[in-house]
Length: 482
Ligand code: SF4
Image 1 (cartoon, rainbow, N blue to C red):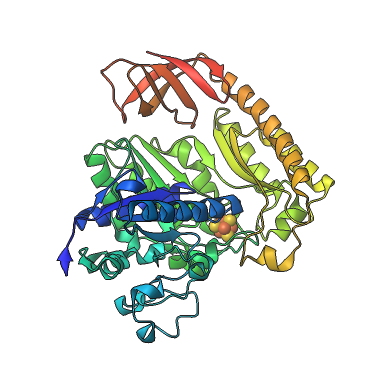
Image 2 (image 1 turned 90 degrees about the vertical axis):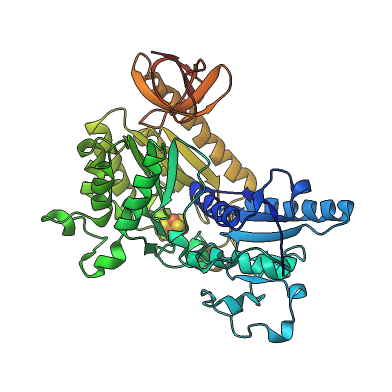
């Protein structure tokens, strides 16, 4: 085999977890000698890290695959395309890249392939949906990427078995001020609208020692903020304490024992030089008082929380197989805002879930009025292939009715955001710079408000600077540097 300097383009769709996964893929490929490019026209391989939360996201992936094929034809060379992330179920390659006679024959269930030889497999249903896909890998099987690329390109891409455990694979950080650290992956909750438990598998948590070591390394190389990522970060570690875990009751930890996630926060908070700890995503039914108290007990944990309500109606929540009620959620929001009125609360909502009546939707409207969210990701329900909701319910809310409900919530949200942002005027907040040009920078306060302000040449991305908030500007804030 030849050794080749592979050029890859990596496009990421969806949530922060996918962005963190892309940082891991980038690190692996860079360590194998490959270089990252920003245009498909310059790439040997295009990898799409996908999201399956909405149909639109999947449509964009198939559209992009077609674009790459046309580009390949126009350039008279093959640009290979691969898929990973939440649309994928099984690692493998299109049969045109190997002798299908020798392919793995029995990889029918949704499990890891388990051995490098198993990459000769084409069971993932995506292969049948697009002839443009050359390879697929489950994100947990990123370790096989080098082998797959070597097989497809006929050159030695530098497969490295050290990376067998995906959670231990280090990331190539895009943001110098903030480090994404994946603490947990997979999900045991099986919300009826969601495909994640099938694509990412059951919950697995990393060891605290490993997470702490990675956080210390990130801080030593300049990170001021750590973002802990996972599908259910606040149930981190539960499989190690299964016998004592009771998600129905928030009491088991109350003796002397803290939840594993709170223990993790305590350990990270003790790291010198680490200014901010954030985490996402959390579930209301896994929330415990010790985690809710962390921002008030620990100086590093930020005063903001993202956790998904999904609907203000208990009947809809039941059909979604969510394990909380609206009253549970509201009690947690009230607790946080009573302790700190500026506490930032953001959430996810789905409108137009099957059977959602006008009265049920009105309960979500009431939830928006009562909880006064600082931001909400509002999605119109779209049926996802393979989910329980697709099997059990009819997608019976017309598209224009979903749009109407979305508009109502969006208008309410805009009003709430402006009201809550106005409370910030006159306060001086430390802002961690995320973006900047020659004159203007933007970043977040501890309670996750986005602030724009003028800067000189003495700051850079990753700097923490005091800013006096002077005005509300649409969805964001304006300020002056102190
Ligand atoms: S908690 Fe529900 S929505 Fe979140 S990843 Fe798990 S199944 Fe999906």
